[in-house]
Length: 588
Ligand code: G6P
Image (cartoon, rainbow, N blue to C red):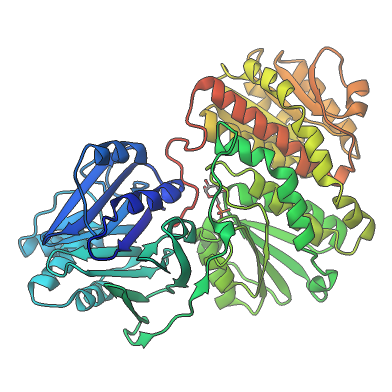
């Protein structure tokens, strides 16, 4: 997490506005604090503010800070509380640094530096990087050599950029297990992602790989590999799609992204036609993912086992590699990740790479993200940039690709998939019913979501959406499991949100709903015309269109996204940037 940006501008240029533009694009990576530092006339000026970037902007507007070379940071706190004092850039003498990642051996380094007389002013792990750089500069090293010695000492993960009072036209940057790109345009830029540097008028990009670093002096960039040998990474054109289009007519990115689902699904279907032969000889599928992507993967298990007849394991990436799992022959591994940067997912894939000869596929939304450099082949969801921290359109686009894979040997279903976008549109037209429903839920302290079969992961995802953005405690359960414990929670106030489309499991879910109704009054059912007829009349129902049973997970999640959105709106939370969360999680 954390977003970093750096700009080496032209002589006389003031890059402060551009740093802020870059940070705007990176705020999804954390918004506990923001800061920037610039070099001018032999000085470094630093401006920092706790909370969202807007607070930094307000401070900047009232300041005269300027400089033609500078760095910026938006923070998701790991070490040290989200205070202004712990905000980056972190200074030591003539050096200022921004960092994304965790210095795992910072305690020992801090102790050594303190013995050498360095005084620590923050609670961050990053401060050791600043002091280590400063110590080397004070010993007469160049910025590049100072960086090299830091890279040799620190353990953990880092994407970092540093500027120097005594080298006023130099910036150094390095990465290890945290993303970093170098952008080329009217200025030379450094950023955690392409979106940030595209917003600073960069037209080309070069990716740094683990252990690599760059030294920028004026408009010259020198690259070095992990052994500090000079290299020339490939420069690639930045496609216009990387520049997000803003909120448009919508109040929030999340609502816009919910509404974009028909087109995101349509584009994803058109550009991904998985060939059923990719499963030839595969005896097991192993999916690793986190968060919402994990729930999409859980749905895929139902589909893969039913339609491909291949046993499928779905693993929480942060757990997977630490139990030293055995991987048999003929496994197809699939990483599912919106950002393509989630460290747990990347590390799980590395584990699979090292411990098996499995083919490794990925489903990602962000092109050229780190996962694409690990995977043998990548299917891209065509959801477009997703800015709202709570994932919506990326989730349904992931489900669309997973469904295309699962149905790849079933032409009838593949053909029917093409109807999904128009059915999505019909469901989105029901948003006003969901809005009314939100009024019944918004005062609850807690909520239960129930689903069976492939709708069980959707119950989990619905509950996650509500938790993430409204801060109401919510849990999803397999409807048949309710009687084994969760039923004790049901009373007249507890919202029980049930997913009950017609199909094979309708009667079973209907019975579970009866059991809930016998104990509570606040039951709500998402169903279809068949359910309208066959479920108890007195219960609140939202009637969705009749659809092929297999497609229900992709469609039933949409009203749950809307429900979470409208509840959050009524509770006045920050929908696009919910507290404590970040969109791209690059720490373990
Ligand atoms: C974070 C985001 C979630 C996301 C998860 C996995 O927690 O807030 O929305 O589902 O990371 O991210 P990925 O990019 O790997 O799908």
